[in-house]
Length: 296
Image (cartoon, rainbow, N blue to C red; front, side, top):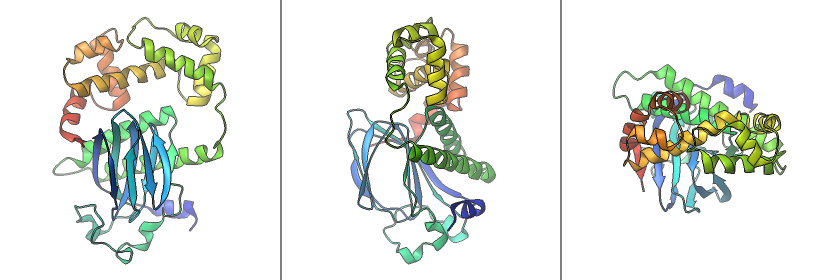
């Protein structure tokens, strides 16, 4: 079926969503619905219907119904996955299903139109700017689907469609550039190394980063915009917010202490930047993670 034609007709139904943090994950699963997985941290092998894919931070994997998937974490860092289950089309009978396991399902039980994604390449690598959008949309989606009554169905559908859009957008770009070295990547790596070392310094400027990378600020700005789709300033803010999220997960420091440790000059600026980046305030994020992360 022409991809563009069936995409015009989908009306997704989101069944469940969760954040899974695993220190040593090995297992095999099969679900009766689609599984959308974003890798927030760590690396893993996904063996999908016998085909192995090595995935890491920034990758999205979509598994269609009844696709067997074996997952094995392969890095020292805990594997953090943002996961939601969905149907491409709303069906009243299927909407009542709570469990996602396909233990009692046969292929004949799955509606043919739900298998429209069976032939796609299942992995897409998101550009940095799109990773930020993906995480923000996921957290919004998770908030909506956990509301016990009066869920905003239209908002849930629209967020699911936006997340699917990010997958297809980056899938096509990834396939076109497969096997090609990113232009100026050694320079970008040096700049990122600098930011990861000095993110806690509130006085760190573009000039400092570009000097470390060995190029002019204008050239480094061009490389970041052209290759990563993001400014140097916003990438540094991304590093700081990601570090803050890790510190929040540890749960042993106040929000004010964390803001100072990750390089923000004020708690007000930190809270505003965090909400812009993540979609919710730091305190709400802390509460969300304590109730919604599954640790395995």
